Image (cartoon, rainbow, N blue to C red; front, top):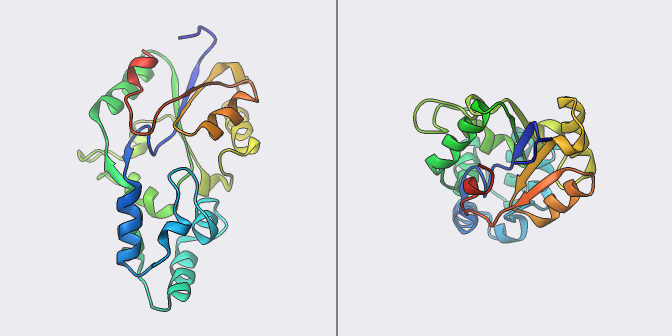
Length: 205
């Protein structure tokens, strides 16, 4: 790895954990969102779903508005169930590599477009199946709905650099979206784009 790099930022879906887009679409259809495919995207969401990831609406407002859109009442639990359709698995090698990188002295951050439903699960002990939330694996968590910024906007990368107090060349960013890595690279951030759900661990250690 380049000697200038002190920080590593990882995307969550498709990198840290494997995702299943079709399962997510099916679950939203199951709870009554007939046009779920129009809203859901492997990399960025549309409409109300995008507003949720961008922090423009809260989880409660999402439930209320989605209920209105489909014409029947939904619960928080139903929406949580549907959003967790994205979860396929978390390869243990990914978690092991994150811990190894931290042990080598790198500051490892999460940089992800996500929403309060999915993150409710990630911040629980169910995350790794052994009682450890996602925060136990990272030195900092930069998630879109909390930052109110979405990748690939320039602002979210600048927010990370500013918060960490580092120069662009000190950060390595790993993501499975070319739009996201291109936007980061345009600022001088070092990037690795990986294929969704593929093994990236051998490329950095």
